[in-house]
Length: 223
Image 1 (spheres, helix red, strand yellow):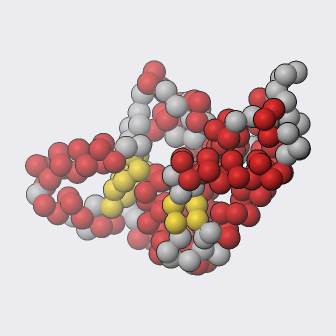
Image 2: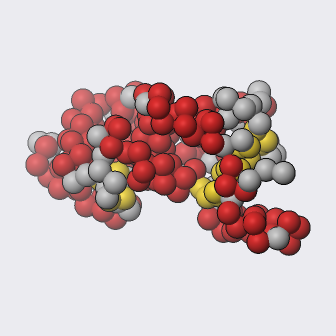
């Protein structure tokens, strides 16, 4: 008795979203294809395409992939640090920035955690590179994959009109592989479901495999 477009399905892989909808179609028919489903990143991207102007992005923003990200960071490192040869590789800097985003920590905190006696950098240098990277993305009207989560959550937290419209629209929020959610994803889900409070999470704490990207086992244990 629920309109399918008022159900939101959040997963960690596009393939999983397709498989679940295919199974649902076998039970209830083609209407299941109208359910909004996808990965956290893809759902955030859809919201941002529609409402991104509320937080300063144009609908046609570009989503940069890992290679684009590394190229931008490589160019920044060459022009920012004193000795690029002794500085951490661009993919290492990218991991630090990503960890900061997914764990909701500062880049300085993550840089200090990575630092060793032979690391060849100071946390301030990593912060300087990260700040220029953020500025460069804004210039290009682009987001990386982590920005989709960060800005998706920012949209819900800072824009009352958008948050209330989405909360009203989605009667049911379903989350798969909940044990792999990080703080950003858990908060994003909680906010969307805050009005109707119809949320179902499926997961297995023994299968938590994404702690390296900020997954918090506490999310499922304390659900």
